[in-house]
Image (cartoon, rainbow, N blue to C red; front, top):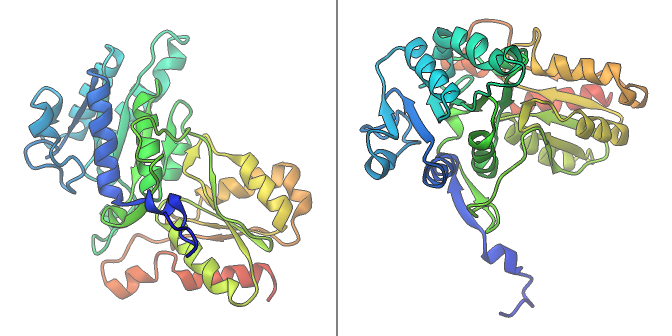
Length: 343
């Protein structure tokens, strides 16, 4: 192969995969690898999933491994938790995490606390997964971000992937984990394609839970985000770079346990921090990051207060123009960076 034109061999080995297909592949491979793994939820089987994330799995694995449930989150989440205690490894899909409030007793009081309350004798290897946060045009009752809610609770691991590599590697790690994992996807990201390397397409590819990733190196300000808003941060960083402002963008990947070391290391380099999330500001993920920095060694390196970019502190409006102004936009991130840098 002639490399004189500057094309790297690694570029030839990359393929484009949507987040939806990355999740589908991860579940398919784990169902095949371990017969204890099964998927249950509303419309996951014969309909191929409300968002087609489980497409083709029912035809391949049948009724015992891919199970359609009644519309009763408390009921099927309880069945899933009980089966995990009995030695299986369920994947419990919520059609949206807004409906997980119906099952919150099972998630918190049954799944999260059992390992501790049994003195380490009873693990609960279960994954609760589905779309989280605001979608488009679904109004107040379908637009909560549950990252801060579930990350508040000891006993849970909380994962929030951004791209296809995150989705694939973290879901495989979550299914293999012996603890309950809340896996927060984003509906608006399902159809978005991302390039994936040959390594990340491997059946052995797993991303460790609890490790953030620096998506872009920078020297002037650190942007920390998760899920869909990592992309917004990268877009804002590209605009700001044209003005000579270099942003370091951190993709949290995991909300709990949070990779504070990576954030601190970046802040010690850039001396400025902006957090970005789609959830509400009060007691949010950004608020926790602010507290961690305040209490740790990176505080002495800050040249300005930490700035948070969040959703607006209101129930989500239905009208599109109001909805757009209720969640972070790229312009909001750019404004916050310039405010932090006093530009």
